[in-house]
Image (cartoon, rainbow, N blue to C red):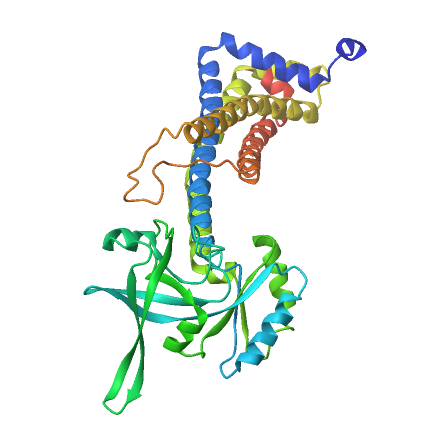
Length: 398
């Protein structure tokens, strides 16, 4: 109760008085609404634009990273089977490693009754790796994309021919290496555009087709962030000449493009906030002009330039704060409604999603509010300095 009875500081009382007095001045009131509304519109536009980009980026990252090894170790050529197994066991014992398997990769083709499809052959050992969603953990065998199986009408148990570009020398000349395999299952290839289809098959068969010169280790950690630290611990463990790549390095061009897109969108939409901040300067300048005699009287009564400066800073902060609050509510609320009810639809056959996702990240929201606050305070400070620089005698004469 004592806090309510305690008198407020002079700059706060003066700012509140001028904020209320603008209601009697139609044009000043209009400019105040324009400034607050412009800031609200700018904050709303920034929040929604960053939310839609974050939503698409998160969906795209999940789509791609689900098919990318967390850590990939490219082993040097010339390792024997025993040496490769020894490296695998050493990696398995490294802190933070959850699973590891030897893989062999290379280009090739898959054929069935005259139909041919260029594919990337991925030979694995043990169970199907995580990079083949929908089939991960399955038994050894041949796995093809579900989209390819649908186009060709493939069912489990169907016999396919896998062809390697590496020929075999025979008395009749070079002959292609072909293995006939029964289809074990399919995996979800997703709707993103990949360089070429991938198929998974047992490592022994893959090495008979491709050789063992392209052996790699597919290493899994607890999560994506932990994988970055695990990769550093693996470098002294693997043999000399090995190349350790994380999911970030494997997707570096894509991640850079996503960051650049978000940054450019932020800069472009933030111009709305800049225009609204300029409207705040015009609003405060009009109030200073209309209250010029009163400011002069306050100066002669002992109001210091610093007190007047703080009063107009508070006034600008109140106008800007109302706009920021309204913009935050509209932006965050609108993003939640649009994402929760999936109101914005897109053709699912064209894009990898059938609706526009929205994701408001806390750091994005903090950045938007910080930018708006800086621009608003800079505008208010410019007007406040003009008010503090008024000569009391000259102000009273006008």
